[in-house]
Image (tube, rainbow, N blue to C red; front, side, top):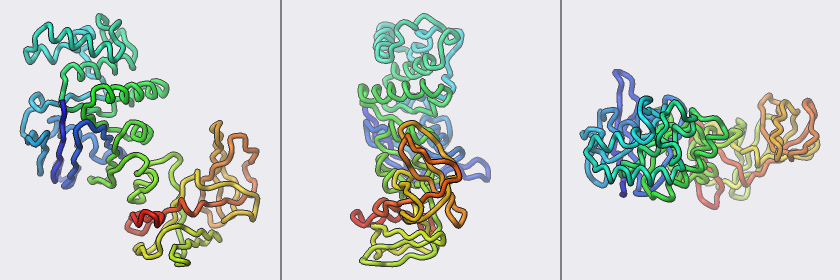
Length: 367
């Protein structure tokens, strides 16, 4: 089954508190979309409004052109997977998966066939006669997903389904979800505050903050060309470096950024751009290398070292007190307190003006 989901000018209020403000979004059929943002940004509320678990104060929601925001949850053709699994503890796995179908009078043979197929896909066939208390957290989450699969919904809605799992199990379940999407070709919406989940699962990411959408795009588009300073700081680990600038100078058609620390970086950002007010340079750690004192764009002192095996993250304190994160080789012999210099790849630099808007390399214009 297919489902194009249209959200038009939707608002949600709890008393005097506005949670979502005139938000619009179209999700094409078969797409895996991730709502990404910090706690309190409205992402779970939006998902629950699509599911019918929260009312819509203004605007409308349509699936395949049909308005559904006034329909009860059971008539919307969607299935939701919760963070808490929400399994009936007194029922077996088989009974949990069958329960929703029995309530709408689906035939026993059809129910049995759907359960067997879902169990095969999710590799839980050997668990069908166990009860939830006999299962691990990962197994319970797969059962919850299976319960959604057997409904053959138009769309799947996942509300932070991996947050109760340990790190290794989260990784495995992420892979399983990606494989499930490839097999089912269904529309899927996944809510998370974890940018790794978003980057690895999504066809498109919807970055949300403060009642609104900050940016919609493919994972690497979001990463490489963040529309706002919030997106740049929220997506990526470690977070993007931001250096407050004293001056922007136009030289040969591009901006040269200068900061009080003695930093001077030639960017590839078109100088015909018009950033508003005070600006900051944004640069990711992988675009900042380490050199000997005086050999780079700005000097600093090693404040913290984070050894990750394949690379070492170097947190260097600049003369003005700002800290910049750089990347060194995994076997780096740097020591805390050592004086170093940082080399910045200006072609990968971004600018952010005082409104938060992002400006990027000139070959693609400004962002």
